[in-house]
Length: 204
Image 1 (cartoon, rainbow, N blue to C red):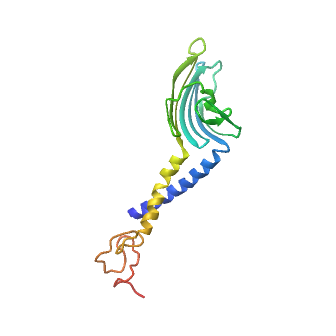
Image 2 (image 1 turned 90 degrees about the vertical axis):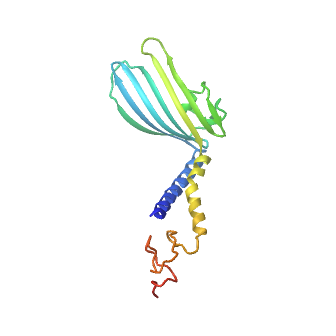
Image 3 (image 1 turned 120 degrees about the horizontal axis):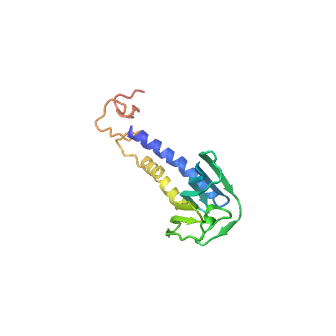
């Protein structure tokens, strides 16, 4: 049973590895931005909470942003999903890497990145207020970026273990599930039911 679960997990990891590789290559041509915006508008005040997944130039970023602003007219509240594709030429910014023109990163290019190392980034923009009057405008954002090579390395772990185990099948163990068959005379594996060659219970 555990062998089957491991095989299933390895297969899922392999599919995710292939998807990661395809997205990695795609990120050098276009930038994909998937966003979930939650709008709350009432009493002349609007609040938007955004969850974002962003792939660009070999990196995948996850961010949460909260904005508020005075709204002169009440509107409908709710949740919207958006998939934005930006194929503009890359534009350099002060982060030390390139991002697509018009991306959300350009809006915050004047803020400092708190921590960055070999493609890993942790960026925190604390709550900022602007404009006059109350409640005015406010914005805060937290962002984590991971290079695709790191994601690919994580996804490849289980498939690699599966290949190594398959090549290093121990003698006296079931070829299907790896169960120890020492002393087995039934001719079938008691774990998965696979016929065992050379045992009494095996018929021609």
